[in-house]
Image (cartoon, rainbow, N blue to C red; front, side):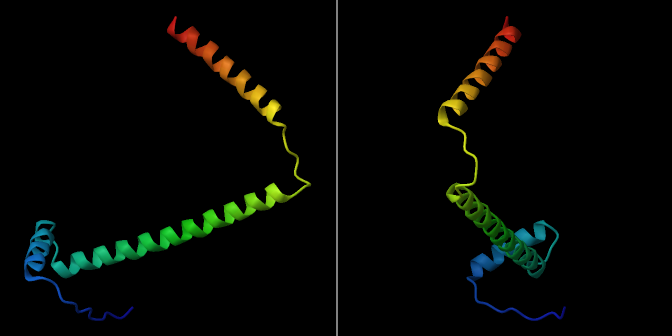
Amino acid sequence: MADSTFTFRVDEELKAAFAEIAAAQEHTAAQLLRVLMRDAVQGWRESQEHDTWFRNEVEQGVGEADDPAIDRLPHDRVLSSWRQQRAELERRAAGRTA
C-alpha cells in the first residue's frame, strides 16, 4: 500500500498539545494520528458489520414471527415453566443461606 500525504488545518494550541501527548507515548504526532485513524476505521467497520448482523437477526425473527408453520408455546405454559424454575432457584438459594 502506497503512502500518501494527508494535510489539514488545526489550531496551533491543539497541535502543540497533541504533539506533547504523542511524545509522552513515545510517538510522533504523525504516528499517533495514524493509530487514531486506523482505530476509527476499524471501529466503523466493526460497527457496520454488527449493524448488518443485527438487522439480519431482526429480519429472521420477524419472518419467524409471521410464519404460521412455527410452533408457538402458549403464554400460560411459559409462565408456569418460569415459575417452576424460579421456585427451584429460590429453594436452592434458601438452602445455601441457612
